[in-house]
Image (cartoon, rainbow, N blue to C red; front, side):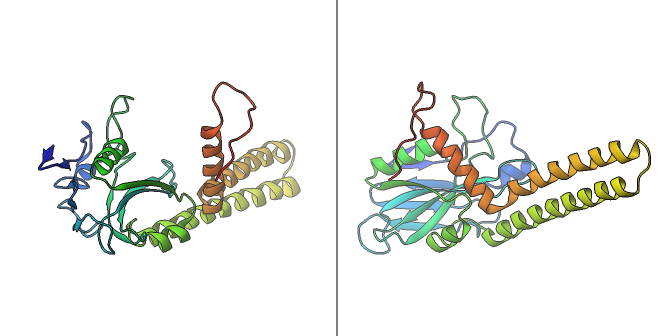
Length: 245
């Protein structure tokens, strides 16, 4: 929707969104124009991404760029990708943020862009308004995220703690399985000395693998490998990875 040269974006609805998901975006909207950038938060928990109304310009405190920020906090059920848009001034100071909803809603069909505010739409609106656009991947770099874009990801400290807690819990479970396997080797009789240690050994290895998936250093390393694969020239197996700058 256009209004006096500005683009007003309303959330992209998923047809089968649950009531909980709908509460996360109902009532929200983004207005991006050559004069102002305005965010109206959802009626439910509006303080997570507070409302802002910023003039566009090159002075401190004025909207100069829209930065798409990626983070990830894996859970048992998904990769925990969190993507947020941050509006910054010419010095890079964050002035406000709003969520993309990427991975939370929308059709799985490729022709339907993901998220409440899909990146191609937001980027097009920002560039038409004369704003700069940037895309920063801070997956697994929580400290840098907190320092560079404070407040852009609600409950960041909680997400970070939960990632470590889940990893440590699975690692402890792995150690318990390993100890039980060793006890069966030492104290078991007959076939129990082979079958049960193998079973518990398998669970020990599996839970150790799950534990690694939650630790931020591993998430950061996995993200780098994913980006390297994405940058590798198509159609040339074994081609040299492009130089990063």
